[in-house]
Length: 432
Image 1 (cartoon, helix red, strand yellow):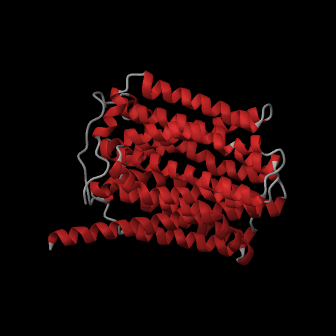
Image 2 (cartoon, rainbow, N blue to C red):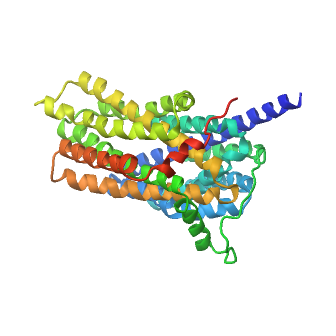
Image 3 (cartoon, helix red, strand yellow):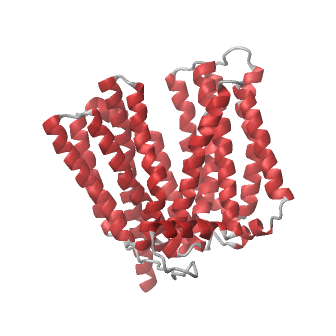
């Protein structure tokens, strides 16, 4: 009877977590999209629109590490619930301000920036709390469900945002979004954040200086003093550079500039990525039952290094623009495969960190990982965009493929791989 109660409490925790995260994530995604459209219609300026996007991404890079420090120092419940609650109150304030003075560009900028700040604290708080919300055997499940929610928000967020913009007054939308964040905070309040408490460990010998900077350094040192975790970071850096350099920039350029496809075709192709991420999240349990994570990473890296050439192949085959049917049925499956790869790499990596990193430093370690990736992405996008001005998209894809394959040969074959192979010793999937 007692075991049955524990199972029910864990299920309730999972439902509350997924409900709260869904409301919070969709609220942020739809708000950013709606306000972006509003600015374009209000000002007609691409620079204004781009500035709003920058204000959405800037806090993620700058505040992530500090959010990680805070997540390790304070109560996770207060951080998670407080972030969404403050976000809700803030949007209610924006609503009443909009009623009295109208929605200005400055108001949109301020609301976008502060909303993202609160969301950063929420995301780091809830990510570092995951190992305490469910038993170890359900860590893969909670991370898979979380990835599905994120992917669905990427997929339908713009669609819902466009529908809302065309049917609901923008001020009313701000009010409803504020209420949704308060609802999310209520749901998150009832989560048991101590369901599966783990042992805390001292991670540094000298802990006398308790400053934000030293706490940040602890997160970096924890990763880079452990070869298996360092290996994961190297792989993530290489993969993020590779995919952004060879696919994320060249493919839109091929579709929109070289072939000039219409927006519907482009949207269908781009939707393949989140669909693949959802598919990958649903299948990750089965994959981890059949193959260890270290072998999965090795195979994915080598296959991806060769498979990405498929994105540029039509440039060699077709002298003219391929048919719309070909573009949709050729590139959408490739994007779906790309999404599956993302899920099969990212979800087990999250579980691995949650299993091996002590609770009292997990927030910092997660924030270090995210910060490194967030820094790599814009740098890679700029490099790829710069090269597109000088050479053909196919050459960029070819260069990226050769560089990535060279990295894989060095990392998996030539270097000492004992530390990396220890990943197979970490049991990611446990019997239910």
